[in-house]
Amino acid sequence: MTFKVDFKVRDYECDLQGIVNNSVYFNYLEHARHEFLYAHGIDFAQLAKDKINLVVMRSEMDYKHSLLPGDEFYVAVEPQRISRLKFAFKQTVIRKSDEKVMLNALVIGTSVNEKGRPFLPEQIDNVFKTTT
Image (tube, rainbow, N blue to C red):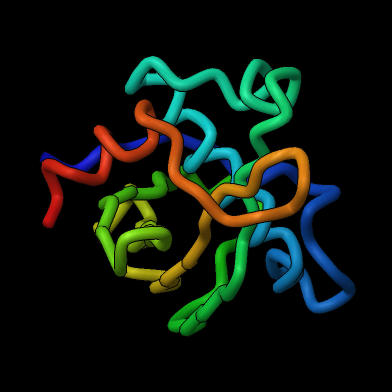
């Protein structure tokens, strides 16, 4: 089942062209990933306190269409297991009014311990086990 987070474009997220600035999409995607993790019992802030840091290794974004001020949309999140130490979030930004895909993204990450070495803590491993 796909996880979804609802949003509405705020005026200040738009550039001089009157469309959502490309950099703002990174914020939308990150917020949706954090909400996904939280919904699965993973507190991003608590992980950091425990010296477990989730890190993005790669982001791929395919911009399809532009969001405009006031557009209501959602970000769909689908977790994917890449390897023993890597996981990915397939994310799609969809405008609600017509279900049009505005952006497709693949964000690949891992987690590192306090020494900066990659490892997957059990709670993260469990979220991505069911998606292989």
